[in-house]
Length: 496
Image (cartoon, rainbow, N blue to C red; front, side, top):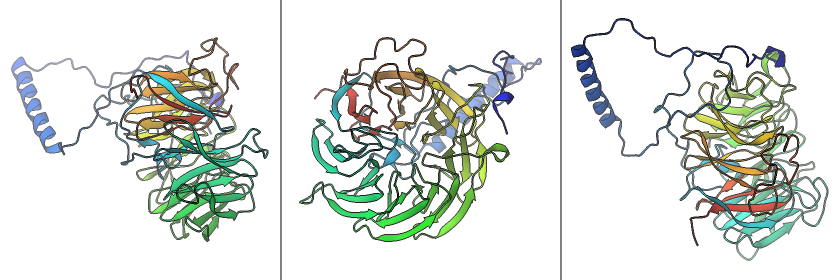
């Protein structure tokens, strides 16, 4: 097990070996010319044969802004080898992370360059599970109300007009609402009171419950809606599939420990991981395909709060450990068997100590990106190997981090515990913009924001952002704060 005592010091040598050896004997100039000409012809032929008529954005090598020791001679990502495409065609955000794979990547009609607050609406506390979703011109959010973990009049599900921020309807519940998803004009929500609701988003029953199911124990998860099923997990470790239209229970299975973040799916199987590391793949009819009990390096205990991310043949699992370690808290399973394929490694020495990962990473091109806790950075990891590639500073140093990133057209949108929302250009590996959402001051960062110690466990001023952002097809970004303010962010140059 790699623990804090095994980490390497930043004071050691940072020299990196050249990837290519320098030759002492050079060929003649004629040979060089011939080789160059042949190479150009070869590249031209290769480009012609490879072309499928689609335009791809090539990845440029970004700067590594957190410099540390070199632990491998593996080169950093080579320029022109990675393409910044979403892993699937997606233009909506009707569920957590935008799709059932939880890839967090979409293509919108426009992106933000000069951020501005379009509107703000108070709807109740946004904890880390109160992630907004968007369908058409409506934003749907579950609220923890005025008092988190207690029942009050503000608890429930809200429908908000995406253009104006005006409340369209409020479905009140007895206690906090957690995850939410929408499909076929039915909003599925989970709650602390142990219920799952199917709420009408249209027609004469607008804002009313079409069905309600008493699970009997708190239901935390972001619902997974697939093939007419609404799949949820609860505090007892039960995974239940409900009929989307009637609420009738279709099947259920049990895993070891409470289920927090929710399930994911590749369209064939459903993947779920409990807080205690109980992992399972289930068919759409409820047949268990495989089970695994996940542990850390050396058999150390781990916990899992986030929903797993489907990435090709891998299932990406963020983990929570008992200490700081020398490697990132991300592991990958073979989605066909549940066998561990890699554990993340900091091959380029970004940090000496890595904290826990409580959020689901997003996937763009060959990279997984996520907000690293105990830092101020967005980190990129190679999805095939789990090796670190680069990091970008976004905001002040903070200890916890809960929000999952969202990606639109090559731009990573990251909300952080300091109350800021950040746009990172993934192709350049650079911070593109930032705006403050920790209060209702119209995006202005508070005084002292750049000073050391502003954040730590909580910001000295304003409120943290724990929930994950959603991205509308028209490029508007929506996210809520722990203070209870839902904010829509657009671009100052969009007009109208």
